[in-house]
Image (tube, rainbow, N blue to C red):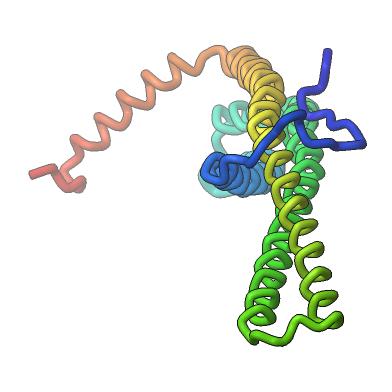
Length: 250
């Protein structure tokens, strides 16, 4: 399958490009700046997600262990059996969590990191264009000052004016060429980024479904009597609320 972000090494302006539409160029420059910022933010959040997933399961095992060894559950065999099941479930999920984190890295983190090369390339093109614009403006100003002096048309004066005009024409040509390239490339690159992100997003969602589906199945197997336990807890909480020492809702 063709990579929509693959660039050829040599770049030439489109044939018969003409003067680029500056408004259109600026619109896609703004889109690309936003896309780069969003991609960096998403990459950062995806890395944070990896860390939090691992921390979540570490905290879960720590919580179950503290409960098993604490005063609340130490002397209740029923609680200890339940907590042993919980610890077994959490330990069983270790491998699944590591696999899920690896899937997130391959589906989202790594592709987003690779896209940074494209943004760096575009930023380089934008910097070169801005430098060309500044050079063109500088030459225009110097030529205008030179002509405003009204110096006699000596050989030296004519040579200087000719040099500035040639440099100015070269800068204008470079500016038009760079603008035409941006007008041609930026829309395609923007669409290419979106097209390349779709399979990453689909793979990420597939990994989420697999992980949480497997977690739900493992939990159902580890705690088969959870519905009955919930019903007993509800009944006991109702009895506790009925005690005279419990403040009644007003």
